[in-house]
Length: 417
Image (cartoon, rainbow, N blue to C red; front, side):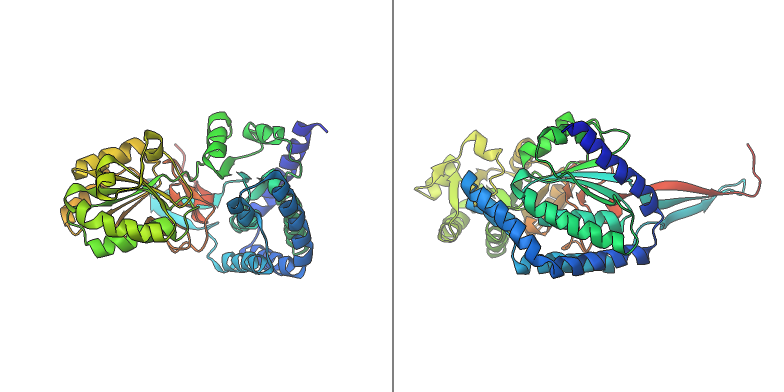
């Protein structure tokens, strides 16, 4: 098989579909989403059979338990995917919204209207639910989508994509609106990275290695998502009871996600009071602690933290702890090791909080709250395609609005220049 020709043909179908999708009514798009939800649940047996193949292959390959859990589909998880489709259908449609309008002295009325991006390519790993989530958000915003999931989920993704794309077609959306690359050849990714003229944007969703590969090699514009080396800084003027609960939540509530805390910074003035009790609770919850020399003097028996630990997104029950002498030292640490995702401070000092908010360069900066809230649902967007850690076009949780761009619309009455 000629991999390039295969991918280009898929992209051509998506590009053709994108023209029709851009003009599709909200009612038709919503009907497609609801039909997709119904089809997922009606054909769940087919999806579960395909997933069982992936699970067996994953066990034979020696995938970790965490990866197997992300890969696993159940009746409940399929029902959750269907519910997600219904929730997206219930959200306001941003396409066609006139953001603002103004009149020039010559009488021209100029406005900005939200329009789809066009064809969105998404390269992702492991979780089959991304196939549904990405398709839903792209369709709602009038975008065609070209999906390339990980090889470990190929049977699950293929079954899901065929089911939802057929359901969408049956209610009037064009063929090619949802396209899945159904081959596992890595060359397919390389082709997508340079498919200028067919893909309008690429969004990678996965680990640091995947994101780095896409960002460094793509000529298609990329929206960079999610490596999260996130910090919580406990200030000298923190409410320590509050800080303890925030730290426990940020590290243990769901450690394998990008908005979980990976490094705890504690001001020296409160370290002796705060760290021993916190360390006991974290250890009871199964967290492996790695500390700086001061931390280890206060919490004997924990491992020393290395330079690599400060820079690592563990995505696991592992926490690096550093005692700092000042806010300046905490800010410097975050500057050196943070990934511009989510950062938090716990403090009762208004001016310290304001300085942290102003000086930390991240997509989401928190005062007295867990980093775990960096999420489209938690922010009230209803859904998200990912967390953007870059600064152009979109930053932070990317909801429906971030899958659109604007065009200028101009009304005149015969004006000439």
